Length: 428
Ligand SMILES: *Cc1c(COP(=O)(O)O)cnc(C)c1O
Image 1: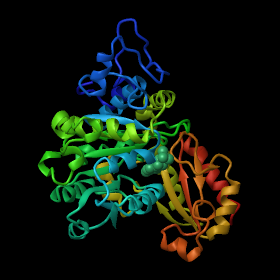
Image 2 (image 1 turned 60 degrees about the vertical axis):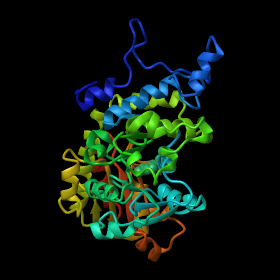
Image 3 (image 1 turned 90 degrees about the vertical axis):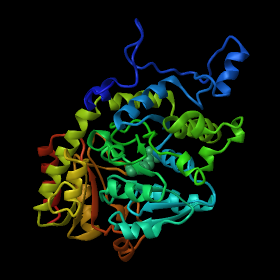
Image 4 (image 1 turned 30 degrees about the vertical axis):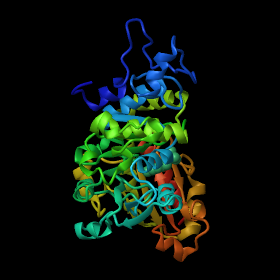
């Protein structure tokens, strides 16, 4: 794909049919692959030759779609996973084992927070959370001798904070560790973290990439730039022999460009098995083919809705990094000159009761826990995902009772605004 633009890559990267071959990526719905001799197959098991033998390790449909994602993010290699959760787990666990430590932005998706804070702790991995607005000194203070990586979200779900990727990458590299960025919300159409120094990018492809609410999935893209051998003592999993794989040293055999994804595939996917099905990868690819056309519309609708809400007397606060009033406006402009995403959060004057009445009155925006697909949807955390908290706890968690998160879809913005208007009128 060379120097082609984002649109061309969204449509065509990752798959070039042979003469007379199927134009669309074929769904290879096969668990296994056939060989003429055991010797041929043995070479695959030894990682001496590349090829397919079992779809838990690799499948051609998934590989074509992963190659497209590598092209979109500007990475050296990529893999698909069964969900965004498994993508983040694999990306972290591929470098950080029991006894290790993670520095993470505190403003991240709830599922990822639980993963790092609770589940990884049970596996012997400690963590320190820092504000996404942390200074260099505050970042430096979070590192320990056993720190293995830094983690953050480019635009956080649901807080909509924007990560200063250059600052976090520089801090990570100063301490000899890579930066992992979950880039689910902006997608590579609006932001490519690798261009700003990130080493590994993760996605919940369930969101905008799929874009139609069809299939749960995830992805990991490696920039292929981090020099594991230069910090060999920190990353023994990549720089010393893997006894479960005939003593292969991933960083030696596959170099900077191949080590990370090869290890995550041949070791973690082999042992943990969180694969994306070829059918789901096919749906994901359909979403990717129009990602560059859809994202600008999500941004246009998000900004229009945010501006409308900002001027409404029943709305006390609007959170959207594209608004001039946002504390993240400047940094969002720097990293995402074409806008970030279509998710907007806002607080209603009348708290929980008003939020409930308002959402019941909405006709186009459906009440869902999902975000980032073609149909507009909304959620009041106080009466759903954060139901167990009282009003004080909600404020402390940054989700006051009257907060509504709205994911603007691909409808006409005039219709979305008219819907909001009539719903708010009924709350006066
Ligand atoms: C949804 C989401 C996840 C989790 O992804 P699943 O596909 O639901 O497992 C991780 N990170 C972010 C930013 C998300 O929005």
